[in-house]
Image 1 (tube, rainbow, N blue to C red):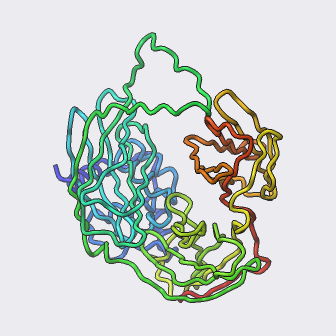
Image 2: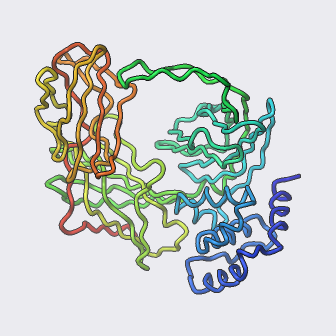
Image 3: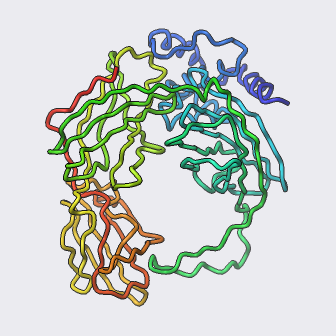
Length: 449
């Protein structure tokens, strides 16, 4: 059975309207007519896209419909897949999906590449793993032939069989190719644990991380080809607008608008006293529709030669048919150039300087190194990791933390845990990710188009 035939069969299962739906469809269609942003004209009635659009509309507007569809695995997975990203939801609503329908079975495990959403700079690959007798299945990070120069993000590990998983490929200085071969291994956990299995020994964050490789249950390789109609989509808008914020000079050089995201490329002046680490900003069109920062995925990329971030991501207005777009900048996060590293006196439990809202909670010497714990409170942003995973001794030798920790507590505080494993010196230079934040008294507004 082809993928289109499978979807049509699933649609037939829904023809007998469940009681939970009742008049939901009729009400949804009436509401759709009142909202001009929810368009699905121009879609052939028999196409797979019509199924996508109608379903996404009903799932987002009517929870009873989503609950009633809970017994149809493919549709339930589709609802979950589009819910986390406004940009990808809009792409699906606008028929911007390439069905793949490639399936392979190895050692009783079936991997199916369901569909992809691609543009000039990103590839989102949605796939499922199925296997009888497994409580969960996981896909290892893929390898590509030819090798791809991009960042690769994976969906959560240890998901129940049939969960719609994804790989996201983000290209910075090069474009998405016409295709490649993607290979990955699959690991899994069975539904029953062995009887009398020994309990795992307790471990400390200072212990050497366990590096036992999981058993690969099956390996897959898929040849993926992308429709050039999709991979060519994107618009580069020159801006070259300079502005001041917190005494620093910045220039928005250009804005890249793609179906899956927006990139705002920013450059700081050479004589600035701080590196730009993050921006608080959003886009707005002439209808007041707002497009915020990416919250799930790549949110920014940096300059390889400095600590500065240079390209920031927003949700995309690509499908909003916007005539005008305005960028609103409301704040920023900085790293002072004289605060890139701060010295800690481990023996006396002090640090020479810390960002406002960050305090030393404990510095403890243990048998296998030092454990540093910091408390993070307002006005510091507790969701921004304060310290990098690198630290240095007085001679400039670099060390790496394998398993440093970060948590947000119920009382609103954050805690950062820095293990300096096998470090035997009394002082250390910690590398900061940021030093302070700024909120603009009056937002900076920059016309984009």
